[in-house]
Length: 225
Image (cartoon, rainbow, N blue to C red; front, side):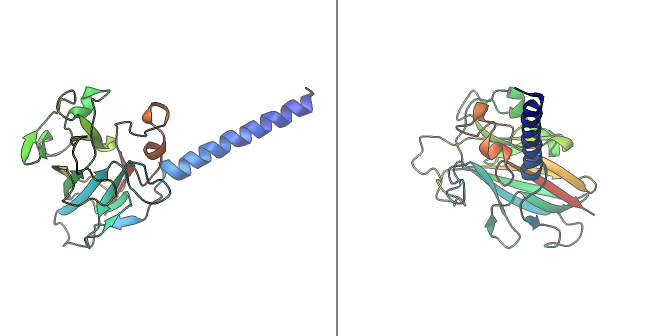
């Protein structure tokens, strides 16, 4: 192969690599969803009540089989948006409705509750600080904000239940676990949150698909003054 041909091949491969990096930055490392505003629905300084749900299969859109998070906006509508605008230095009362099944964790540290009030989550009305994912129904997902040291394991539902939710948003007629935690937001900034349980079924090591696209298993806390 001549020098010119080798140079052309190199430049094509370089352009492809740059395009891939740009794609990853645009689709994952920066917020792409519509921002759900939780700053104006309550008086300044009042706690924010934030409700989300995790679903094993969203059931609609371009990837209907993907696992996902959804959020309930202040008006009561469930939205497929994972960037949430919340006020700085404010208590967030987070309720997570977990509708997905679970499995043993690859890293048992993800079963430890950290970075929230008392380092405790309220699981179906009972406080726990650690969940052994090798028992029961395992852990389906986590809600984690690495920059804030937050990790909340979401215990899975029984995969053999007859009323597992198959399409979001899920309702009270589907089997679920309810997890409640509270934490205080820091100063203004963009804080990424994500699930640390590889749940991209059909992708290498479970880390592709919903794990590497915004609006599914990760998003941002957009903390504003």
